[in-house]
Length: 255
Image 1 (tube, one colour):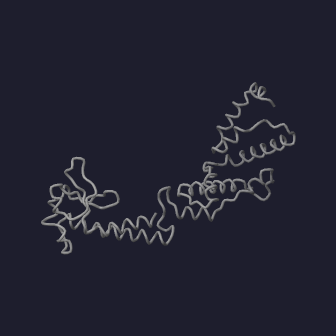
Image 2: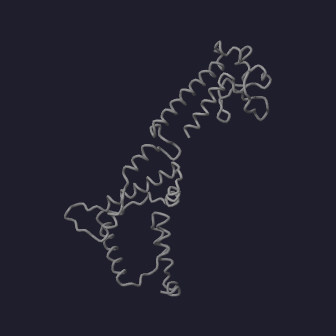
Image 3: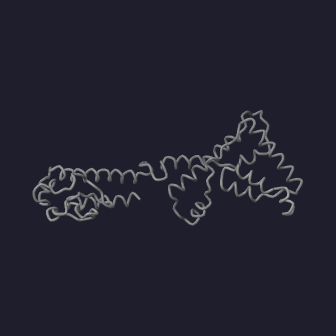
């Protein structure tokens, strides 16, 4: 069938209506490449499949293909040994779960129900249930990995919590004037009076205290930032430098 005939039949409008019903980008692309069949045997087969699909929809309703994500790029990266991100793994998981729902939809409700020409397509679907279960166990959201994803990750995060608590205990003691004997050499007088605000803050990945600029020489530590006016310096007291270093190393292990 030539292009002129297709134009007269407004075939492009028909195809666009069909593509609008597709649930995935790859499905839409496939719809847009369809051309009218000319082989009688293929036409008869397609009509039989359409009738079988219509019968299933009448009996069971429409199947859901909401998780049909494109994973071709991820598969290509896996073939060359690349590691996938949590977002990529979740897309693969959702695609496999969609395949599982489709396979379940394709099963006949009773042993007496007659087979049809679509059974062979449903039989080819592999839900990969062990894989999807493992991905769901390890990945909570695209940007959140479960502590239980691996024993090593669980241990690293436990160490991070312990280190964080130690840092906050040290800095809270300084902020609240509960300076232990090991810290007395780090400040002259009351540290609280040197602070712009009695709070613990972060600069980059380091815990700091907001010190009034005029008292810089009274607080032993590393300057990581200053306020826009220059009146406040964000200083990492020497008492927590090693702990901050330990925490940074643990962040790297976590990644």
